[in-house]
Length: 351
Image (cartoon, rainbow, N blue to C red; front, side, top):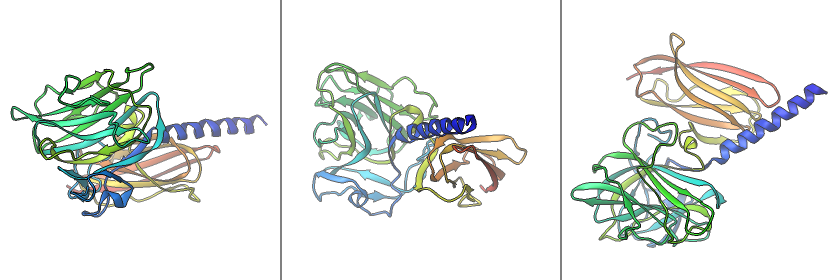
């Protein structure tokens, strides 16, 4: 009886952990579609600009070392003037923090223009947390505003560092609900090198001013603005989460539900350069650990160490920082029923 009770407790603990882990990622978009497809064909909703300069998938996609969305699929070119579009998040909330991460490469910019924003679940006009880009003195800058404020007011805060055109940066727009009226905060992180595993100090912000707090957040939007102000850029790898750590989770996609057996699949492509996809299946909820080792058995990468519900999952392994050679990846799973599964396979990095 005690063994059954222990198994039930473990099951519910793992189930809660799995639901918590998955609930942290509210949206994940790598634009892994055919170049030329409109975003409207893939769940985005046009709310302004009509059929002018329709937001569409363009090639190639962007890359940024250490980001799970790097090098997957294509990208979207944001221009001006033209269509604006939003997509809905998997959850609507009015508490804690929201993070919107993306890779951005700006080709040209002007005095300033909105390019990405959070929206409430029923609004297409109240840009709650907003990301801007501008060219000032020949230097690229990124800025944030909150609510109804514009980037021409003192409420807008711009980066002081000088960024460059035609360079891919990793940006994170953060919106934090704070109790009271006019207290919500917006922050911006702009990175050009390593992505830290813990949340760093914002590049700008947090800013707090009474331009109106969001009643909730439930959408993320791309905005093409006016021809006199908007930047021209590529954006890729948009991920909206409830925590900084979830930005870096290796899980790319849950591709199906409830398989029959545990399975670790052969990576594809193999040989590969510099990245490859590894998939695995779980017939029940459990704790999965996936690591990569060199031929001497030394750990070179820890890809996954999380609890998941039953399903088939994919994750990407990036070998950009490794030498050519033979490596091995190993999956260890502790299932909610007490079952254990381990398997390993060989992968070949050929630079």
